[in-house]
Image 1 (cartoon, rainbow, N blue to C red):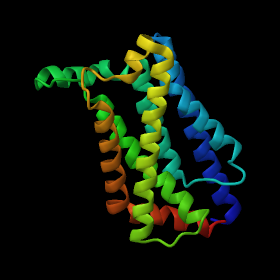
Image 2: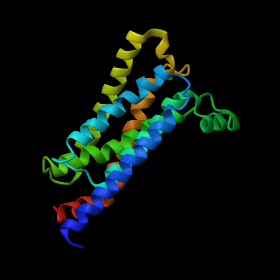
Image 3: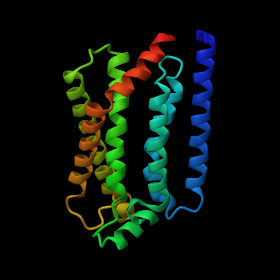
Length: 212
């Protein structure tokens, strides 16, 4: 397969991922529990998608990372539709195992840390040309934790403005340590990502750079 054919194959894959995003977006918008909560939860998605679209010609992530981004978006849209504390499957798990809360938000923060690590790592390797190794991994983890903390601060700011209307958006479920747990699971996700899956990521990076 020549370079032109390879690029066309990649572009088709990216178009398919974009179409799947719009399908998930529409499904999430159908009768959500609260349109206000939906907007608050989904707003970062629109910012991220716009950035990816407007920078696409200058920088393309590997299809591997784009697919992971779609997974992260779908999980966020599910939380936006039901609110994180009311996702049905995790309500069933809560009742079945006698848990004290719906743990869907914990899963999402773990996945966010896990996937964000690949995004950050790819930018550092391909744009800044940082050498692969333990220093790179530590830097990725620190950046992911910083992003997680920034998001929690943004949530706090929104809550201060919206007041009680932001309760579903915050999703504390009575846990005073919810913010710390969210950052912790994001941290664990990023650590697992860079320590166990970097070789898979490297293969996709090498394959992409070979055809550019």
